[in-house]
Length: 350
Image (cartoon, rainbow, N blue to C red):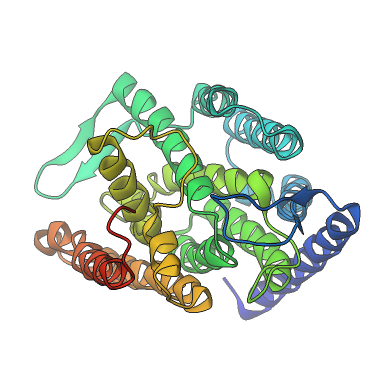
């Protein structure tokens, strides 16, 4: 990519960020309020639905991509299936922000959207494993792809309970993913990451360090869904073994928090689908840690994952399995820190 092309792309991303910001301001004026309750961190009614700006910027960006940058598009069936599924996720999530639908309704919509995307042909059908070579997984790959999309969509949604945490993490992930995709010639992943990152950049100043508006399910579910799709698309990078792991690597802080919290709650007999304040970032805030710095820490987890991806790409095959373990010690230290803070604050039951 030439410097001139990069500048054009960045100018386009800035225009989309401004579009997102304008839509967010409209949503602030619309006064779709998120009212406080026992499970929420905020104490005054605050507008929500700011993710509408992210969705609008992404769809406009994709429309321009479809019209003027054919080399950056997926094959037609994939492209159509992914975009229609993303729109479906956004619409259902927006109405959920309005009506607060049961989790089963949201889950059903997510599964259908995942089936729509995978049914278009976009799924992991082979794995290029170090020392093993190409492993064809066929239909199993489609099933695993659906499960991954639903999990990632919910993981990002679950973790959206603190100002700037999700938006900053997604923005960092998009920046690293766009750079990696450009180096690998994965132009759809590059453009989609750039467009999603632009939408999030337009939203973030309204949500951090203090929130004039929340992202809402329309934003968090949409971001999780698109990142899940980009992970699958990145899995087709020809120059990187196990390239599917790049996005999960960058989302390792979010994924660890969600998996640990779900397992912990299941083991003590709590309903895992019930709203709660037991995520690690929530316990840390309840223990007295500054929520602004907790959000920045999660951005750091995403950046650490991004640097790990760069190391993973350039490493010899024999080292790749070890590099994949890089996030684990960091997350275990974070878990120990939160647990210690919770005990000091008298939070024996999270």
